[in-house]
Image (cartoon, rainbow, N blue to C red):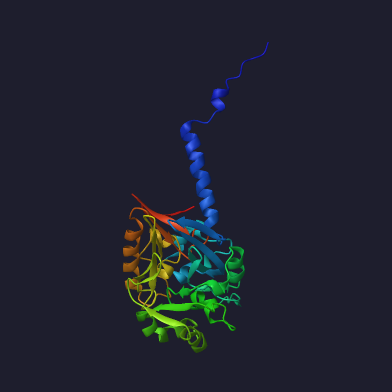
Length: 312
């Protein structure tokens, strides 16, 4: 005689299936926090928005975010890669309107800095991939009409300072306040030669100025004296490219944690609170150039605080 087997007991319940889906999503999220992003694109109304990677930097978590403790990182170990670093992508954001193109930030450029065990803030950093990645998406650097900089640091100026020049048809857009304080950039490795390369094509921009169809400046000082975000708006949707106002998704949960490189840490923290409020508005996305493999996302607020939800 064959004994009947009740297979219903082996079937997961709806709540168990939902829990499994959440667990899988959490595991995928953890993996994305520990690796740099590849090319990622989305549509925003009439605009195509593409993250163009150039390279990657390793950030020492307690050095980069000096208000943190070892206990903080034990609690948030999912943000750290196998060598114990925060993973920070380096690259630019391409905004396309038909055949027209704007680039926000220009990566680190064709160079690499090996890890110095005695450096308190960063491990290794390298660039070099931005032009190849532009080619992969069908764009030549000479087609870009403007390069807009969030601020004057080497990992954002990169390819704008090489010789011979590659952005041969582009204006270089810098906020008036950032340019006034350009002497401060020397402390972060910006040389006189790099500033001279920017000067050749420089156009100063003001708060709220439209620099490209749907793209406007948004003053967000703190990381530097004239740090600038950019709002990209089309089709009833908005994206905020916030530069180094945030360096890691962990700062979405902990906006009081300022970076060691912030020019004015207290102002930087206030700006993050302001930014997070903006990112929670309807139909608003964020772009974090250093956000590992989570460069596009939305801010979600719950009882435990704000979190970054990658999109897609």
